[in-house]
Image (cartoon, rainbow, N blue to C red):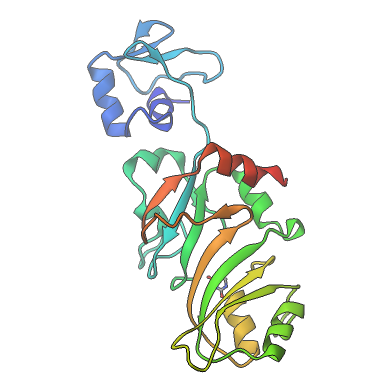
Length: 239
Ligand code: URA
């Protein structure tokens, strides 16, 4: 791979910053100063140093984003801002993509990575990875509605698998009807369609958990951070 990509992917700097570092003769490959970022290095064989410190190559990156409303879960779009547009320049060279989709108006946990294997595992229908959503609803939920949602509701094209509903607020006196729902599937508009099928309407939807990964409450809408080692290990453990 190109040396400038190697350096940018290893967190040394953005491509632009890397160019400067090369110009300043701060980069060595196998103990030779290199000024040309276009040369190719082998991440398994060559030793790359920045200011005489060995740089270890980072191939994959795993980012937790608190997705805001109005941004789409895609890598490119002609009209809307995408989740990729929210990332800083230091992530440009990784070519990350969102793991699955949240609707444009859905907020919350979205994992961005360039690790195709993890993404595939998390999204595969055979792996049944749980997704937990915080939901605000238009109307009260009855016991019958809850039973239907939990045991499978019939939608136009399929019947949903078992789900779990946890009530936060569902009383006449509450000004909001708020629940969590956990589903193991991820079909198009699934949560909204499930509540519609029991005569209700989702007013606000936010994903709070995917597999073992919980949304970091310190992340404001639009903010992101890389996963910790522990989060990543736990997330991969089930596959
Ligand atoms: N279900 C929905 O209806 N929308 C989402 O964005 C995610 C799950």
